[in-house]
Image 1 (cartoon, rainbow, N blue to C red):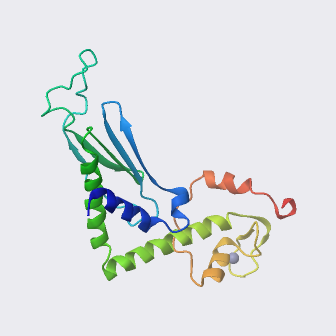
Image 2 (image 1 turned 180 degrees about the vertical axis):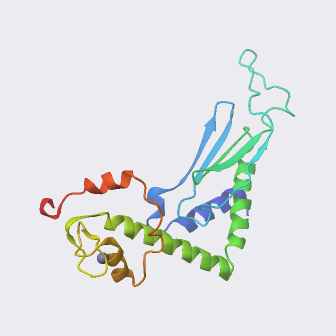
Image 3 (image 1 turned 45 degrees about the vertical axis):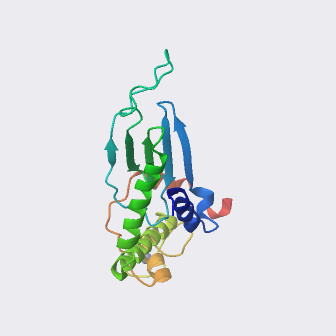
Length: 203
Ligand SMILES: [Zn+2]
């Protein structure tokens, strides 16, 4: 199968009714001249995976605008730069390198697919998802700001804004286990964030 068909398959495999609304792929041109391929990796198997950057050649050899001629063919456009930053794959290269750039991406995607298909990897992935969801729920509960104490005895904590319990107890009651990251330092700006939440009366 050619690179473009494989890229289409990868794209289609990500589309699930949600992914395609937030993430995607773009292919554009550069004025070197050249190509730029950008692939958003969020919520794909490639999210947070490490990628060894690929770089060769010199992107700064350009067409001579005076004569409108290509510099010597063996050097001109013979460059590629591929890297991943903030869960976005960026691949750039000379005017004839688009296929090769797509190939570099697909090779990496294929390697990760194999590495992630073991039962151990599946377990690790589930664990990561669970941690993400725990943190999100903890954040949503917000800080303990009400005047009254938590309805469950044993702790002197106040209630969170929308609950009769403290954050700790609300989490434990809902999830059936203790919040695993309770001892982690909380960023100071979160306090302000939650204080600006509307009160129930305002809702
Ligand atoms: Zn409590």
